[in-house]
Image 1 (cartoon, rainbow, N blue to C red):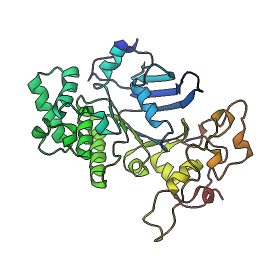
Image 2: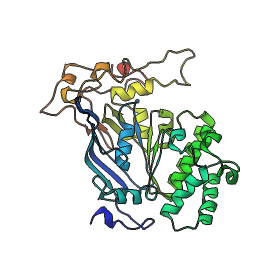
Image 3: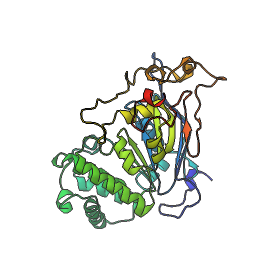
Image 4: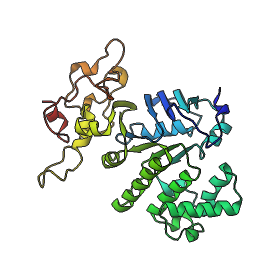
Length: 356
């Protein structure tokens, strides 16, 4: 059975994850230059009603992973390998027609920058109704009525008037809500949200996160949340995958990850977040160096140049494979030879201090 034989949108499907990503690789090539491996063997799954977070610094491969899953990467100069299965059916290599049928209906994505994601020359109403007319059997009047309801659902005031306005006439929060309305138009089974709260004030951010949480609870949608904001992860995600240099380096339940980060990089991310329960004026503990200070995974652990726990064996291969992602207790996986140890210091301590 091929992906062309998927049941129609809205049909009942049970007994398997909505999305399964297995050893996904994305390599960018350019004539006369060395190729760049942006995603290097990423694997994860998302079940109905589950929220999974992809966390990491800018440039770690989070957004490229989401674009590969959605089939939105350009074909020229990009090599995508591994497997991406939606309802058990392979998406990599599927025809453009099949992907267009799935995108917007069964799969949807909220992009990071709403101003560049919306067409500046087309009214908001036209952009929302386009999704409804393409994927749902509606007349134009029914589509306009549904678009008005969707804008109202995402908290846009006076939705009938907003349908006639252009993106530049809306605030950043309203544009983001309009994007979410478009994504929710067909009640997708999989929603990927790529930094949906970037550049929004705290109040609007909380409202959008609450909206996404309600979506997962009410409709059973599988949600993949891509973010570098650990506060978003703490309030929304069930399971968290921490990425670095194109690979997942730690994977755990949200509560376990925050209570006992094992990868020094994860510990560093948590330590760099200001804490309300700490002493006034306490200094922050940033991760030293920058995301560019990496070594190829083929030579060892990419995080080793920035890691306070790094030792000589972090820069060598073991049995022909560099630092594999291994079992680290129930529901946990870890890619590290010298992880943080417990009990020692509470979560949020510096990476080096937690290991001593």
